[in-house]
Image (tube, rainbow, N blue to C red; front, top):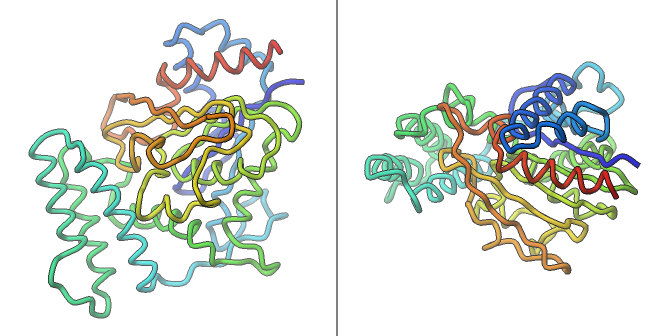
Amino acid sequence: MRPRLVFVHGVGKPREAKTELEEWRAALSVGARAAGHSRKAAELLDGGAVDIRFAYYGDLFLPEAAPGNEAVAPAPAPAPAGPDEDEELRELLLDMVDEHLEAPRDDRQAQALRVTRNKLAPTGEEQGPGSLARQVLVGANSLFAVPGLRTFGGWLSAGAMKRDLHQVRRYLARKETDEAGLSLDRRIRARVSAELDSEGPTVVVAHSLGTVVAFETLHAHSAHVPLFVTLGSPLGMRTAVWPRVRPQPVRTPKGVGRWLNVWDRDDFVTGGTELARCIAPNSASVAPVSTRVDADGLNVHPAVKYLAQPAVAGPLIEVLDAVTVE
């Protein structure tokens, strides 16, 4: 039985799953070569020794189903953001700012982050109609002036950033349902679950919001997961994400044999570098182990930037090779 490798994407615009899978696989091959695993990468990733899947759920955030996904009812169009939604989005942004304030690059970045925080949560200001939405937009715009974080997340505007972060909020809100009464988060997890091997080993690599989705999905997965890799994960956001993750208390899924969490200091979406401080080990004493990488370029958040890192690709190839031999 071939081992399975499942990629789980994060927030963002709709994507073509086959194209994205090839981009992720190619980036992983680059990282594997850099880690000294050129031959094994060719055998495992290009030679068919591993069943590689891409779990796509992005169309479920759209008001209409994407072509080729007509069999799955689309999520309803989201209503305009209200006070609760704006507050949740502000919590996300504040968590991001606070995480980077714990270890800023330098005094200039720290000062810019403090200015952004004050705009997101000004002291002494009454919360009148529209004030929360205004604070979120002003604070989001302020982030684009933070040194070293100008193109974080690949966003070109505060509006684009709000649109993508609303996907995180909508997933964790668990309020939207389709005509059959199925919640948006449940339907998203069903997409990921469908790509997992129900009997053989599956290595799961998840990015951004996909790390939250995969984490929750794996709690209901009975087969062995020899390696779970989280890239640019917001799981450690202590106000906006971690308290809303299910199940509580938050611990490593029971079937996971190893958890590698990888983060970049300039990845603004990463909520906490050391997930073990807020995620308990499973019954086999498996807890997330965090590794820092430093990608080139201005935008370090994309999954392909992480997959091309030897610190990510090396362990992945080694585990895939081991389970292929078994």
